[in-house]
Image 1: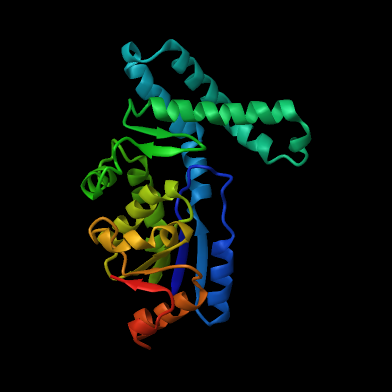
Image 2: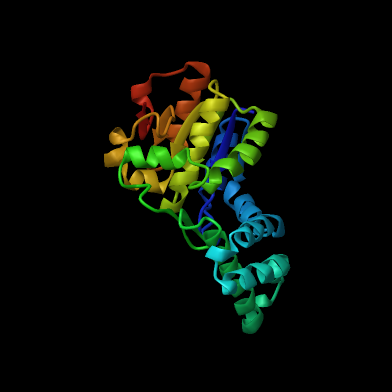
Length: 262
């Protein structure tokens, strides 16, 4: 495979972006063997699963002296109900059943209470939000948080799950598209893991979030976000040109549209 374009996990599972499909289709039309992966969907199901929530509940139970009884009761209930809640939201016509929709969203919201409580103050994680306290104070604190499995729940998940697919498919290049701020930590984590495990893979990033902060790109240390290039604004032409340069040695870097090279 030439190119795998990934949307990293996003806090709000309703914030899917159509950009991956547009870019992948364009690159295929230009002759690149390309594929897309909305990792946000997979991550949502992983964290909102009976298995993950059971592990959280057991951790909370092992520290029951520090945990409110109400939280333990919520944990017991969401482990039981989470699969049914997700299934309810996939049922055609559920939008007309307000009571069932409310129950499903309340259950998913309570799953976030359990995920957050099991971090014991190290991060907040629910279906609307993901945040690590003081991680974004400066690049030194961000670097430390990205490498800390106790503060970054995506570290183990991406290492165990995302890298397995990349190992199997062996793309020559990987793109990471970040549309929302909540994708920064998982997106940066994914970039670091890929470069550590597969240093030969060319790595490019883009998306509307990076475009919005383009004036800060030069300040991001390469060790924090080790990508080979960033494509800003519209990515179609720039990605095609960058792939030709990075994989075939064609063209010159200065001619790549909307490209910031490391």
